[in-house]
Length: 194
Image (cartoon, rainbow, N blue to C red; front, side, top):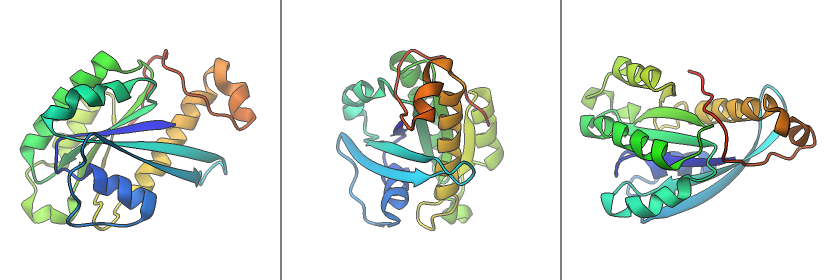
């Protein structure tokens, strides 16, 4: 499955991807230039199915926006990340949603992720605000900490289960999944749960 991670610069997109793909955290990580790519193959807890996740970590700076939109095609899931200690990064999520709606496939799963939960004392965005935005946009919502690894595995396991469920319920692809082949297609309608 192709998963694109979006959000403003400095919110922890790369830290989430690196934490999940390598179980590492680099406090002095340099901002992503353009797009970075990681892969992780996992076995789903509930089903025992093996799933390969292609994680596309995007740059948050405005100057890379035109490049990044080319990666939206044939994407199965979008993760919108904001920093719970930075209200501006939360407000900018609407811009990312607008961009994705213009350039991406209709059928997709979307997650809103409030990152840097380890810095609760500096929180500027409440959990309730995050949940409200997610509900309004039919997205799943979770708060994480890439630094401590809090809820990172849980979020990706949940996402992978939703992706498999999305494909299994599509008659065009159920036979491929039963054979262990999970195709990527771009002409589907949105299906998402919270």
